[in-house]
Length: 423
Ligand SMILES: *Cc1c(COP(=O)(O)O)cnc(C)c1O
Image (cartoon, rainbow, N blue to C red; front, top):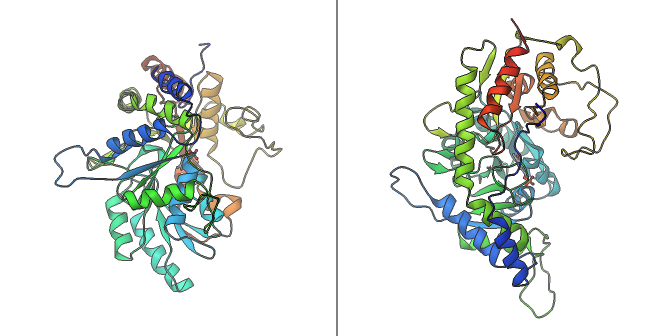
């Protein structure tokens, strides 16, 4: 095979250029304009749609921003997070769930996952709330559960606990666009919901994000902070610190084009998941991560597997002998060079051997995200953990599942996995 198969690459619908051309023709090449408004309207329509016969209606508002990370930052700000505060964040996540907490001078306190959805454990969440109140004398300012790899968290249980202690929930649905819990779009359960349109997400605007807001008033407040907090005077007047976080009208044009294929993309990811399930059936030592109940309807942004620690993979005795060179300066944006092949917590040897075997066969795969409480940058942060995320991290791999991955690619990937298992 001379083609390389990537995890999840952006895929254009063909409708993007018309929206971008319109922005040029009408001279709206700025961080506001008709495409931004149109994209927000499309997103509002999408997130407010409930599948099945719901007895309620949703009327969420959406603000388009320059990144998902900016959306997390502004949601925290709107929840009143400031210096000295604590925020409870799912540990098993990408760093953008927790880094903005530190931008505000607050401390992320990490909560472990439960093994069914791999997302925030409601039990550990409640333990953390009670213990933080005892330790600090005040309540955590917000709770940030995540829809990791698209999988819906136990969001109803999480929101019930948040309500009991009156703490706002910010759902990080950056990976979960179009995932549903009980037919309702993930990101619409808490006070705020974060979306990302980075290049590798379910849809892309090249770079971008959005914040799902509870109502028009909250949307207006987020827009105020996203546009340098300008007061209504003929001159620049500032009473608050703001940010330059609005989405550009060009990026929003890409977003409008992408919205025309969002449903198709989601269906494609689900089809690939089903195909992986079929083809991996009966492969001993490999477990596919699936919807744990009918309440969860994952978008399967990334298909993920666990390798049993007793599974033997060809070449595992040589795993970690060399440092990673490929990502340096490449698509992953890793610019730091390391001389150490090891850290104090890394995936098992069989996982690394499988990653290398797939890479050699032209297939990109990636270990599961390393939990934040195990990251050196957060080594002094409090955490409420029981080993679940750490154990998943050591055993897991993400497999290609984007719109450019074809059904024959999945067959080739599964065949390569099987060929590298030592019976
Ligand atoms: C991608 C991602 C983000 C951040 O989105 P950007 O648009 O890249 O800033 C936040 N949280 C999670 C879980 C993500 O995967």
